[in-house]
Length: 166
Image (cartoon, rainbow, N blue to C red; front, side, top):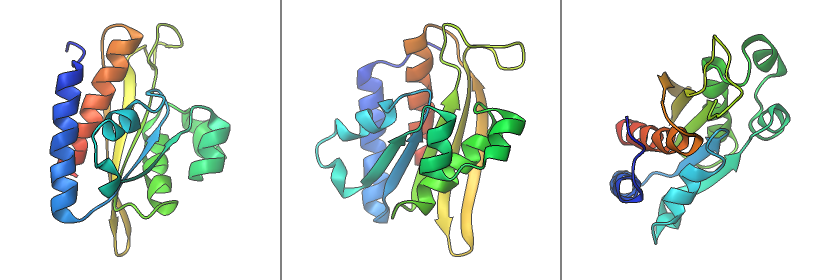
């Protein structure tokens, strides 16, 4: 998959905006490997304050624990780049905000840092929707190819596409 161009990301953001405004819902983001890129793309759209509540860049394990209440045990057992951590980040973003929908991303953007189990390009994305009895969370693992920027852009695109489904 080629890295999406700015025009593609902008189009996805406009689609997400339309959905969120129509449903009168707010979005929150919790980002690690994208370093705030999802929030940046969202806030590039004028009027996004009507549907974007807030975002976190929780790059370190410590920030994931402090800001999103990700349990230390999850980080120790599974590592930051894992399904349980992505899901906990998405839940934490909902709990710490007024948002009705959240997206969380954690991964290995490269060019180094990969392992045999988690090669460069491995990304976990989780989407959470607030429900009366807690949160419904959906998560997916991706293996993106390309440069650091390409991995991050592909992550942003998939995060936005998932918000459309959420």
